[in-house]
Image (spheres, rainbow, N blue to C red):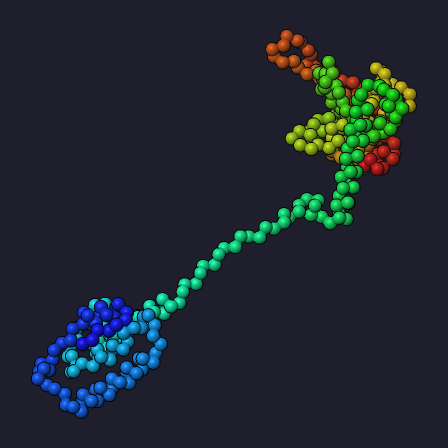
Length: 348
């Protein structure tokens, strides 16, 4: 028997495969007609194999007919190595022909794999550098950039003017403040007034509360006098715990009382026109507050009001030997008649 030339797997399988000897095979000889028919059948197979293009994995295909051209048929061929033990007999995979076909197919696959070169792996491309994305004002169009620049310039000028006005209001008397004093006061007072009493050599050591009571005419014609309402305590409660208290809660009532005491004598008489103006200003504030917070005033019309101040000295610390009185000191103003426009007009 010739050995198949070609794929190493086919050659190894053919070497390990042994032809079983059938009983009496040596004594039996095929008739001349059978041998001629067998040779005739081998010719087309060899011709068919030679027509296929020869590849590195398909060498030795011409040896297949010679291997298969064996006298006699083996009754129980032994399976070559690599054949599954569970393959049933009689199937194409359990026969020598099936084993050779699988080996030849493996040779063709290996040959085709050797012929086809592996595809080169794609080379990763470096990312194309991109221009930085503009941010802020640079991301806006030219028109909006101009508008934003003008807005910033206006705000900067406004802040500068405000700081200059506040500085002139608290600075010592100079040529600029004397020439433009009215403009400075109109800009600063009353919203941006700076009180430097906290930083004075003798800061305030008293708590001053403004209180008010009123005569209210009820709907049945009777007049009822209310109790004293502590307006300063109401402002203090609104400010306490409030991170952004309003200017009205902090300064309106306090500044009105300071204005009145500065324009009145010790016996509560007004001095000039500013004294009368201070009375009217304070009276309007207390009437408005009574209509807002006092239940009795809501049910009737306020006819008269009386204002007083309650001054209490701040107690010194325990380690200090200073002694001060803890009794309140009252300053009571006379009754003021409330005009009709104040009692039932815009202040209500």
